[in-house]
Length: 177
Length: 448
Image (cartoon, rainbow over all chains, first blue to last red; front, side, top):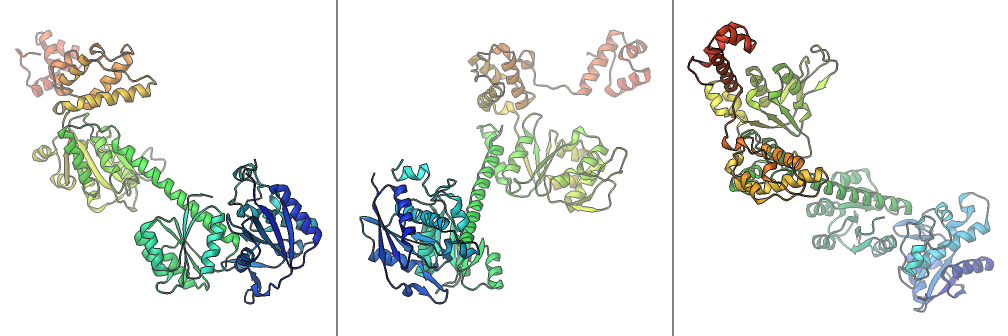
């Protein structure tokens, strides 16, 4: 079974090298064409002054409406702090078996936790998060297999425990094994 | 994660419902949403949801009111209350009304995962608990109680009728009819079934031992009382105490028992602290207690205190139609316990069993079948495997007194009523022999 092609849409300033590395990791995992698209849009309308965060639900809805298509799985890449009304923060989210998702590296950098900057680690974490949200858009739910990228993660330490790859069962579900 | 767990999210804010829906769907739960309490209650009446996640502030009906109504629909449903502003009062009220937990919006993703994981664990434990309870009570219910005869069916109906109450019960019936099994069936079908049923065989204990067994004792109460010991009444707290062979207890114990039954409190032997225990009493006797009351050997007040309900188990000879089912049951039981394949029984053997009087009742039949399986040819149970020989001619069980009388008469006749020689042969002194002759009214021309 062949999977949909993937489009990664960056919203805001991103290091080009980092984007390419993320795209490569995604391509390696799903084995489909991954294209990068840069969008320079004002995301201030998603900013919630009360919470000083960006509304993940509205962002996801707009990514789905304006950038996604039935032929692609589209993930919006962001560098801002995301929230949804019920949770204090999220790393990303996607429509289960849908067309779109979002992921942000805001809470993935070491500096956020008072540690020394580590660009490679940040790229790794971001790649895993993007692969994870794409998994949801390909209908995968959270997985209990140790180190599977589809394991639920609520802290960066959880992300570090995972591999940037799907376990055998998840691959089997997608017809990749 | 348990993938079959179903969640109902109740919140008037669409964004909250969508966020939670999305979050839980990704975790593999079955999720549904309702935008107000009325809609949620209607959904709960029509379908089952394991967990309800409800906002406390909603137009129309608030979360606390909805919580109360949910508990009337299904008290097992786990309800988690969400609020934007936590106050101690509302949190305490929610928990008092049966909420599983109380969370303040927005919550950390990790808190949400933990909360649902704990609730799921609670659901699994409740389900496991229910399964085990059903297993335990069904096992107690059917164990060894076999009988489709009208006589046995009316006994079982009586058991069913009396079990849910707290009434004292006296079970009467010949030895071996299964009085203890009936007591167990009453206990197993009563609300006390999750607490112990404590059995005391009164006939096997001397008066002082019985007192210590029933009431317990304090360290040093008597020689050998090295430790404090709980009595059977204390052990039966919230459960049932089964007093077998109640007719054998002494007058002193009858008074003690009456006092305990009336007050449900007592002191351990050698103790000075009053102990209370909530127990139900079931007694059994193979003697006619009413006759004993008439003869003055059993206290009338105790008899009426115990005899709220009387169940009489018919002897096996009065329900011979139950014999084939009992035989099949015992064959299966012993063949399985001896790791053998289940043996058939030849028709003639079954016929002979149905003609037998069974003075020892079901217990005798059970022993007979066990013996036949052990001594038989291992292919089938035959007439000759059953010890039915001369016992078939009599249903009379000779008492110890009758045997003693018959034996003394035999020896006296043998020695032509020479008292000295007869006493020597019986290994008693002459005075004892004279006393026995007087007691049994033996005469020179008497037959042994």
